[in-house]
Image (cartoon, rainbow, N blue to C red; front, side, top):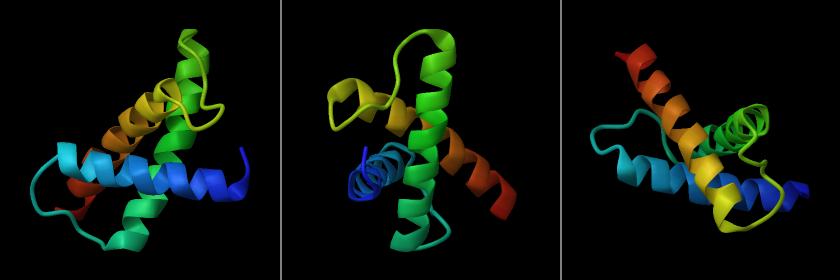
Length: 82
């Protein structure tokens, strides 16, 4: 995926993760994008290691892996900020 695709996927994954994990979230939109992009990387890594698949483009499997990774990172980020 290109840089623009990673940013778009990160924005979508970060926004969905924030929506699925309600509550006060530290950081603004920039932090959301960073968590989403890092979640895409984490989801792709874990998906590849577990044999599920990887983040290859803008499709449902990639989005699911990205959102899952973003949820893990967002929960960890919230835990650290407390």
